[in-house]
Structure formats: structure tokens, C-alpha cells
Length: 421
Image 1 (cartoon, rainbow, N blue to C red):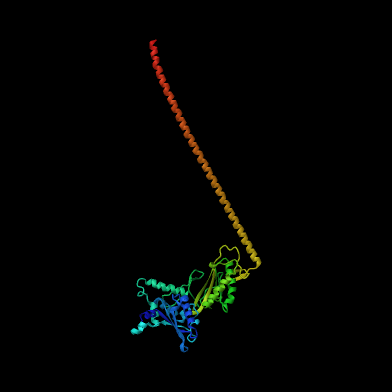
Image 2 (cartoon, rainbow, N blue to C red):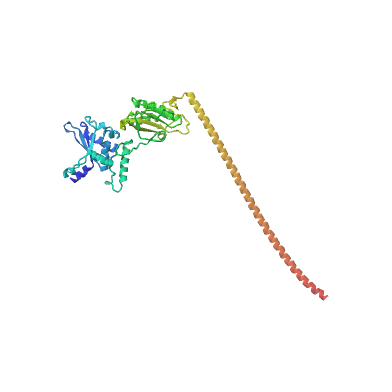
């Protein structure tokens, strides 16, 4: 019984599941929800699907590895609003009669036997929201909170209200470089400019998306500036949003990528990015599945070839886009060709100057070497002359010494001769 109690301690109850779906189907969908959308570590055998008798909805017990995973799962699936932010199609799971799944903590067996009343689901959620987790991780409370934050950010990618523990992971930016985490319905984003284009995006968006992307992104690129196409915003700048669940968002991303791949010359992935920013009601509640689609292209430096989309060349003007006629394209190409020639000429002049300076430098160096060699030879010659001069002087001194000795001898002998005579 102790093993069963330990197993139930971290179990989550999921109710209101489809009664006409097989248990294997429900297990697979629940596994996808927790593993891939909530980023909870578990295996398929951790999920038990039960019920369905007497035409009643099925339910499931999911045995998780820790209380952290259990409390986070309950927090993320507790309400219709929180479920809408997960990005999962709950129509695969929920019974039509209930319209929303029910989530709670499985009552531990040990509590039942001991006569202890388990905490309610709301008490568990409130404890998860307010607790600093010191009792669970006494040595590293901040690390525990950080783990929850990272998990929640990876799941949602948008703003989470309530509790103060989970934070937003959106990294969109407006044209001023300020971070955008959400928009409010009817919020004004200003006027259309050379770097902003607004589209309401009504009807079947996937049918008009290719035309919008081709026209406006191509126009931004050919204007040599960074620009953003907003879809879900009226021409007047009022935010409305487009209804866009996770499957639709995936289709839109795919359609954008397919359209961009047709651009000539090629537009590399790092030069554009796509963001879905959630829209909130004026009272602060989330407008379910409504988002503003933002497609941004970066400035292309050194534009030497105009971008084409669907065989057309677009150019962005102040608040408008026009298709360039062949004569304009020819003039533009001539200007670019002239600029390239001028740039090449300037480069040639710089190269010649560098070569001339190099030659002058080498000549100056050679001249200096010749001068140094000449001075060295002169120094050697002077030294030789000094040595020769000293040697001759020494010889003369020796001769003088010899002569003086001879004179002395002669003088002495001469005196004796004179006396004899």
C-alpha cells in the first residue's frame, strides 16, 4: 500500500475525456499534451485511462515524477483561459457535453486510510502560486523557482497572468527596440509608414497571405530598410487580431516560408522572422486565440540586385507599395552599375596609391641602406689610414733613434781622433 501511496502522491486526475474515443487514442493525445506542449517528462505507461461505462465520459490518472511537474500541470490546465495558451487542440480530448477538461490532484491512498482529508485542487494551486518552495528544496529555493519559470516560458511563449511565478517568454520588439509581450484590442499602433504596413487579415488568411508577403516584404527589401508587416491591425492602426489556433499558426508559418523561398535573389532565414503576439481584451483578459501576426525583414546592406516576387518588383513608398515598370528597373540598374563602376575606380585609385607608397617606401629603404653601407666603408677606410699612419710614424721614430745613436757614436770617436792629431 505504501508503494501505491507514493505513486498516487504525484498523480494528476484528468476528467471529462471523450467517451467515444478509444483509451489508446486518449493516451496518445494526453502524452502529446504533456510531453510536447507542457514539456513534462513522462512515458506512455505513466498514463492510465479509465471509465467510459454507462455512456459516461472517460477520465485518466497521469503519474508524474515530481510534485513540481504535478503542480505545474494543474496550474497550466486549470481553466479555459490557461488551456488556450498551451497551443494544443483540446477537441481531441474533451467530451462535447463538457466542453473543457477537468483537472485535479488524485486523492492519495495513504490519506484515505489515515482519515486525513486531502487538499482540494484550488488549495494545491494556491500553494503552488504562493509558495517559495523552501520546504521542498531547502538548499536551493531560487533554483526551484527558476526551473518552474523556464518550463512555463518554454510552453507558452506568451504572457501568463496570475500567481506571479510564471513569466513571459516572448521576445518580439517594436520599431523602437522595445520588447512587445502583448497587444490590447483597439490599441493604436500609429500610422502606416515606410517601415510599417497594416492589414486586417479577415476571411481565409492563408489565401491572401502569399500576396501580402510577396508585395510588402519585397517592397521593404528593395527600399533598403527594415520593415514589418502587421496582420490583424486595421489601416487606422487599431489592433483587432486574427483568430489563430496552433494548427493555423503552423500553417501560416509554413505558407510564409514557402512564399519567401520564391524570392529572387534568395532571402536567407536569418534576414526575416515571424512572431504571433497575443491580443488581450480591454479588461485584461485574453482574447482567446486572437493574435497579431508580425513578419519582419531586416535591412539588406549593399543592395546590388532588386528582389522579385511572383515575377514582379515592388518598391516601398511612404505608406504604399508600387510595382516598378521596366524603365524604372533599367534606370535603377544603370545607377547601380554606375555606382559599382565608381566604386571600382575608387578602389583602383586606392590600390594605385598603396602601390606607389609601397614603391616609395622601398626606394627610401634602399637609399638608406646604401647610405649606411657608404658610411660603413668610409669608417673602415679612415681606420685603415689611421693604422697606416701610426705604422709609418713608428718606423720614422725607429730611424731617428738609429740616426741619433749613430751620431752619438760618431761624435765620440771624432773627439779621440782630434786628440791624437
